Length: 429
Image 1 (cartoon, helix red, strand yellow):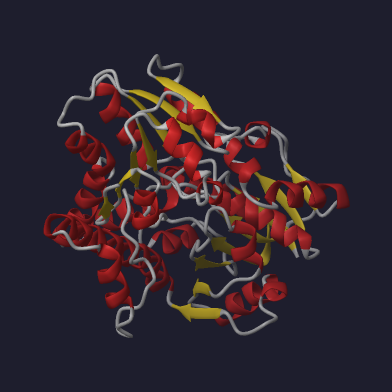
Image 2 (cartoon, one colour):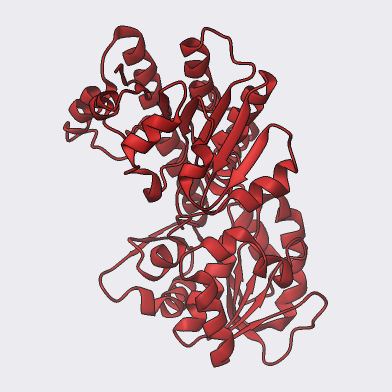
């Protein structure tokens, strides 16, 4: 099929690469806010496993063409317009769809892969000519696993009110639907709301578990015992029951805000969602509060090592990441920070500039430990799971390890002569 992909989101880059890899003739038109030269230099795209190499492969084979700024569309009309824009680009997206309708075949289909307000696919469809259909295809990609989740999907959540449009989308994605049936079809508006509701539920589980972890801290209970007991209940399960120091990310955070906007626009205020968002913001400071308690508020002049800045392992993005809130709290108390991350230091430099209380490292994680009084684990990169414990213990002046993701065994850390403070877990040497 002849496919035009428009947008600069991860969803756009992944769709362009994946569709080209299975023989579709794809033109990728990045949004003007992030053109191809900008994307090619971005840390988040380069760090996404396989994606950049797949894009280069598609271009080399001639199946993928990437447009530069101002470059006109050429060739035959398109059979599919794949829209993957950010929520902030919604109004511009409507104008673009109306303009591009003249370059679409009479039976073309618009695939809205953007996370827009409920009902936006209906509004986009109104901008198309007669005979052209629109479907909502929920963006279910996982950052750090985008290629894998697109090419080997557990499901496609398809909002579609037209059988012919469904057949065309099935043909478009047939190469990724060979192992088993992965399409779940429902009306367009239902699919748009389902996407938001999924992330709302996941965020609620995380925030609830973080609240339980705080209670466990107060009561002197190891939250890991509680988590295992809860997860063993078949009605609950283990997924998203891991307490931590807050969640972030561009898609997850935006979807929650979008769901809150939908609630507000419908006249149905959600006290629950407000609490979920508030709890998450509070949890981003939880490691700082543990440091404060350990040193009885006397933090000025201390040096803290931080392992991890990206909002999750496998990505270079720091959008809404807990580390940003944590850094502001530490600097307000005059704490020097030595921070290591294998991928996100470039994004931090771009976001924060040269800060006198910040030193960044992306080589050996142990470099960040030199002269540090405490270590904070913020992002659970695999490189951090099994440190050289004797060396780590000898380098930390204050013998304090603050585990924001509960990846370490408290008893083992204590045996190394360190004070361990996790999320709902603790142990003393």
